[in-house]
Every structure is written in structure tokens, then in C-alpha cells.
Image 1 (cartoon, rainbow, N blue to C red):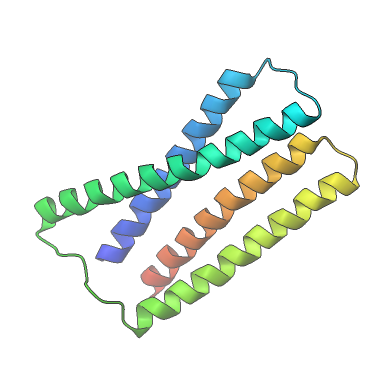
Image 2: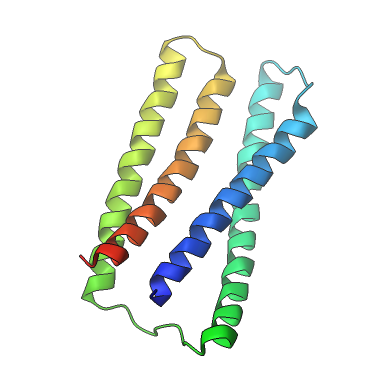
Length: 148
């Protein structure tokens, strides 16, 4: 298994665990809260604004730990450059990620048109962000495995 494949597997697992644990934390903390109007928008704004730095910090820590453990276990050094193959895979993964996010965004806007609760729209946006990241990682992993 190549370094890129291992890195993408770790990234996918960490994304699932970070997103899942954050969602569980928010749900457990606010499951009985009844919010309306401005308070509801503040809540979702805080959820999103806290999710971003938490995810960034956790991913950086996990990637550093992965690099250290991988280096100790395999004596393999992270490639210091990206060739044409890596750039091609990254572009394809980005295209899939954008498509998934735009689809989620359209679903979120459709929930407003269908007069659903505003929370449905925000939850759809957050979920589409997570799914777009997972789709990007999954695409990279698939393309590295396939060798295209």
C-alpha cells in the first residue's frame, strides 16, 4: 500500500470520527433546547464556527501523529513533491467534492422552499460539507488504487 493510500485512509477515518463525535457532542448538549428566531441562528452559527477550527486542529494533530507512526513503523519518508499523477488525482477529487457540496447546497435551499424548519437547512449544509470531504478522500483513494 502506497503512502498516499495510507494517508487517505487515515484522513477518511479521522474525518468520520471527528465529525461524528462533534455531532454527538452537540446533540447531547442541546437535545432538549427549544430555540426560535435569532437564538436558533446564533446556535447554528456557533455550531459551524466551532466545527471549523476543531476539525482543522484535530486533522493537523492526527496527520502529525500519522507521519510519526508511519515513519517509525515503515521507515518510509513522505514524498516531498507532487508529480503530474498526484495533481491529476487532486483535480478529479476536487471536482467530485464540489459536485457533492453543490448538490447538498441545492438540497438545503430546497428545504427552505418546501418550508421545512431552518435547522434542516443548516444540518443539510453541514452534512453536505462532511460528505463532500469524504467524497474527495474516497475519490483520491479510489484513483490511487486504480492507478489512473
